[in-house]
Length: 234
Image (cartoon, rainbow, N blue to C red; front, side, top):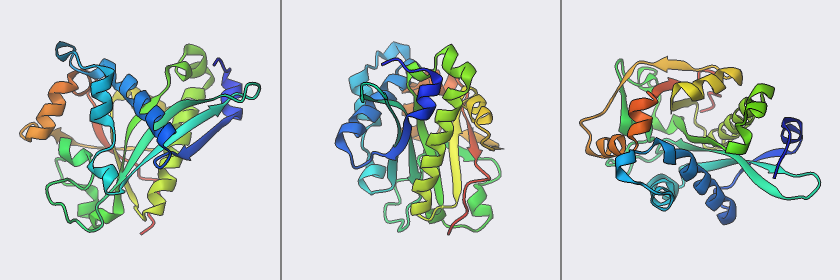
């Protein structure tokens, strides 16, 4: 399907597809395709393996992960394609599983001055994290980028994630993002605040991901951020 930036902006809807098996599968495949170039080339990690790695996990099984998809509906053919996806994970309200961090970011990074929600004496049930931002290749063409459509799609996904975190009464939002995503975030008029942090290389689970996704963690240099304008509903 070929759409102009104008048609994308006029025919795009953002929906929570967590409970829709068909669109969840499409969203997971888009994530796998997006993350494939970021894996360690020496390991030969394929799309099928990535689908397993990035699919439903403990956060999903506990009902704390929601997948948000941007769907574009062709006005003539009526065909619907996925233009982008993101996932929002909310902190564990009950804290029953001490072996699993409240949000994924806590597996990989540690702020040098502590987590902002801890400094503010906010419980983990009030935090959330956006991750697995992927925009379809067809929506990342030079024409799409120049028109602002790519940044606009990201903005719509962000707003969908905000709606999901509001439903869970979370009010502090984090994300680990590389520079190329931050550029889109800036173009989308989304304000972020850098949190000085370090990678948790001593953690065995984190170390495995650092090795498997070496092109992401080593070459892309992602950093931890907070979204200060996220709704502070509690």
